[in-house]
Image 1 (cartoon, rainbow, N blue to C red):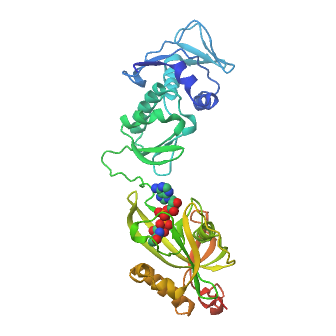
Image 2 (tube, rainbow, N blue to C red; image 1 turned 180 degrees about the vertical axis):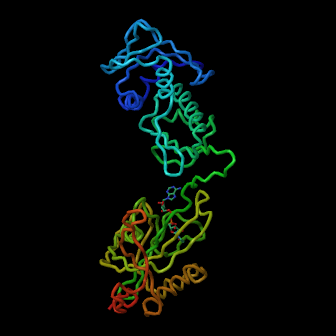
Image 3 (cartoon, rainbow, N blue to C red; image 1 turned 180 degrees about the horizontal axis):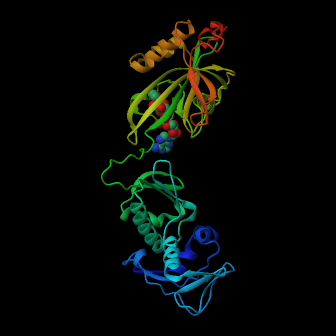
Length: 369
Ligand SMILES: NC(=O)c1ccc[n+]([C@@H]2O[C@H](COP(=O)([O-])OP(=O)(O)OC[C@H]3O[C@@H](n4cnc5c(N)ncnc54)[C@H](O)[C@@H]3O)[C@@H](O)[C@H]2O)c1
């Protein structure tokens, strides 16, 4: 792409009104018709204007009319110096819509991206020059799947992949050459849950997975799975158990958690083992994931060679048994809103409640009386 007309920029922007809004602000009603031409090679600052000096230019019902005195334009009855006005307007027209973040960086407004690759390439390059001039730091550029043709253009300008979701890819650019990149990395963990569900007959709820490694074939194991985005650990554990076995449960405590690395896609894994109280006993398996499920005597479960020989599951069972004997206490969620970020959240702890009455401790609860 060697040149692009302003009409292309104006027409291709995602929201025409949004675009006008962005350059109307400083000129309060200035209107420009799509008659500028500029060259990518020369860059935005060295563009030669081809604004007609013979006609008024109309956009959105406002006018920018040349005056008889050459070199001046009249806006809402006020004379403006032609060159200053035009170059400022042009400059703003050629930049991507973006807003500042709290760390001295910028976030490109993905709802107002130009819709043609040519316009995007030009505006991205101009914007980078502008941000560099203004000593901006990190740049966040979210490209929706509908505009995936813009990805290679951004990569060519030096952007890097940050993360991707089903509907978009996020790219970043760190501007300061003499400072280390301070942008936070992509999420580093996946979060899994396992349900230890023991009934009054000291039977534990176990499953056989449909898809597993050959060494785990035939193993009766605790129901496990991953929690969903924005899902709580306590409700994720209840959901996973319900999905895999059909058994309703009530969350009691996080008994322990395991931290492991390079588990999937080079991500780390946080695995929360949760103690749950059964509210029903009928088993209905999810036959997409699970081959079989049953209530199994705890001793029988522990005696399986794969459990007996596994340091983690053996230890988990020991902890659960200690909990049942009141020799151990897990973590219970407490809902709160921190003024730090104003978000509702769950804080997991096992100390007594506010009134310091030990009988209010979750450690004193007897689950199976
Ligand atoms: N499974 C275990 O025995 C076990 C042991 C220790 C810890 N954990 C922990 O449990 C949590 C969940 O792990 P998990 O083993 O239950 O999850 P998983 O790897 O079995 O995945 C859960 C489900 O996702 C689906 N799935 C996963 N990858 C797939 C693919 N490539 N194609 C199609 N379907 C796919 C399958 O239906 C699978 O049953 C993790 O935190 C893990 O560390 C599990």
